[in-house]
Length: 104
Figure 1 (cartoon, rainbow, N blue to C red):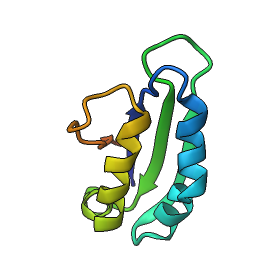
Figure 2 (cartoon, helix red, strand yellow):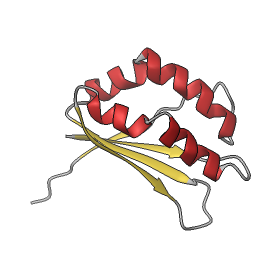
Figure 3 (cartoon, rainbow, N blue to C red):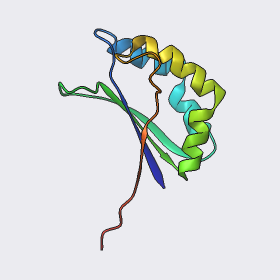
């Protein structure tokens, strides 16, 4: 299993708009239906750090996540999402991938 962690930083006063965007476009529901996705969650930060939200999803493989990132629907949506983010509009909206470390 692979976990993707997408760090989002809403623009000033846009935290609610970011959450509404995810709800309106049913982003998490669509991700959960995508082949290889096991689950997806949107988390809101309670602290004052740089990130305002995290999107965490579990995937069967890294290739499954890459197919999600490359999906035309998701790519188009990412460009729209940039309007409420405090990032460069051309910055890709892509999460980091992690794998489970088995400790003996």
